Length: 147
Image (cartoon, rainbow, N blue to C red; front, side, top):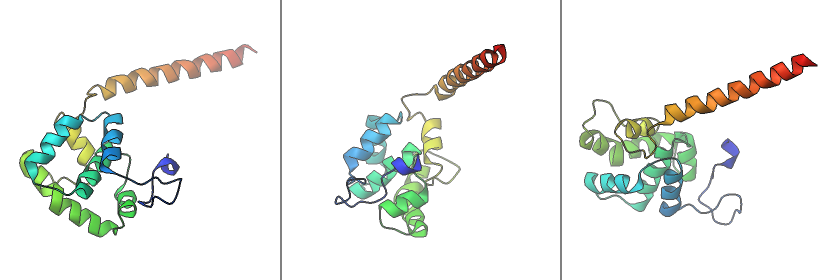
């Protein structure tokens, strides 16, 4: 899956299309996040540049590590984490009334717990998927043992 992630903001590389806030929102929507609710959240915390909104949406997908985002936005990981905390994390912590710090790696979990995901039955669907995989594997084993 790591190879399918965009790595650069350069539009000259066909493997890495130019990133945008709209693309980040669409990706977040595809990952089960409630975009209108997140837009309202971002409006409440403080005016943010499109760059930080894009970082927020991409971090919220859970698809990117801090290293990935740092590379995408031409930051060092240390600077990106500090910028994220200063521009987003501290405001999210206050607005969402959290006891814990909000960082890049904890963002998706916190948004899920606070109801910002459209799909709130992830564990139920994962259980069904796992059951199907187990059933498929056991069918394959019993078929192979019959021969």
